[in-house]
Length: 468
Image 1 (cartoon, one colour):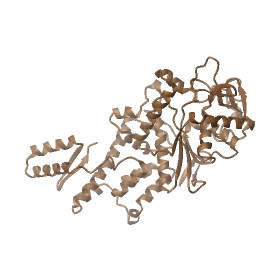
Image 2 (cartoon, helix red, strand yellow):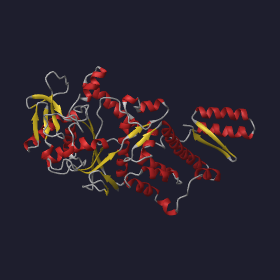
Image 3 (tube, helix red, strand yellow):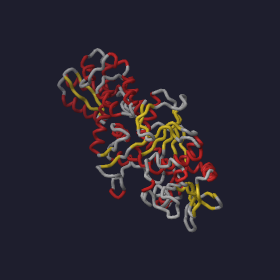
Image 4 (cartoon, helix red, strand yellow):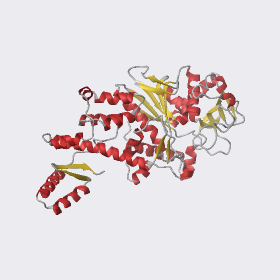
């Protein structure tokens, strides 16, 4: 299995440090509003990673965090806490906002049929551990205190710039974050923020005799140390995490615990919408519920995401989503044809129809379709190549079951064999056509279509397919 490692900027052969377990940490959502489709893209990519690791017989131990405090609007050390913004917007408490949007995120997560992590953690459950980590960093000489918080001195961590290839000498104040002029260096970051006099911050804990809350970056280091232990095997996130969030994670973790934080770092690229960055000001923020209102299921969106590669920037359009929906429907109807081929195993018509347009596999390939599929995914999660193999292969129901296990598209569950009552209607319609009673035949066709079944007539019989 080969994966692109951001740490080395190379594709490397992956193997866990402990052959019995792959330790993975996924940066989760900040729960202050409805997640949009761009947010869910990363979880779809990492779902593919988990399923591919499982197909390689690895046991996965994965943690996903929920940020419910400390993520400021600048993504760094300035601005309003995003949970506080959400609470003010909706006239609720920050705790109510967090609980509501955690449930909302998980509802979407389940609708995409994503594999659940071994544990989902909330930042606010690790405050005691956060404080211990700040104390340790202070004891080792990595922090200094300012009026508004405790800061990590990046100049004391020699390898701070390595991960993101930062040019610290020419880093302008405010180039990455809003610059606090009291900081020793523009790249220094808060591990703990103090609540200023008059500032209304509902989530607060006492530290150093003052109320405050943890910096956003701290929670990931704390949770990884507590739940998995360093080094972990794979850390996942978006490319926007590289220059600040993940760089800061590495600094504080490796400074504190004197060991590598993660052996592999995987980062997915952005999706744009109609060629534009996803932005509230452009009015192009779509949620999974928005897609449903337009007639698309979350799994149609998952299909679209998996047609591309996690390292490529993807441009979303509804035309492309419609094409992905048709592709998924086509796959489902290939499964429907297999049901009919099995029922009509003595009929050449059905076997020819199932194979129509497909390149037959060689004898060797027939024995190892699953291996060919996994080989594509083992090539840095190349799902596009795997999809091409599916499109051009003659498959069995067992093959489709394996496809569902690898991609979580619910193809078989969403394509049940039709009940006997509908099969009887199809037979009645065929008899009506034989009797040239086309009025009855048309009436039965309409009844079938009302049950989401369409009929394709052939010279030797009728074949049913799902309409949607």
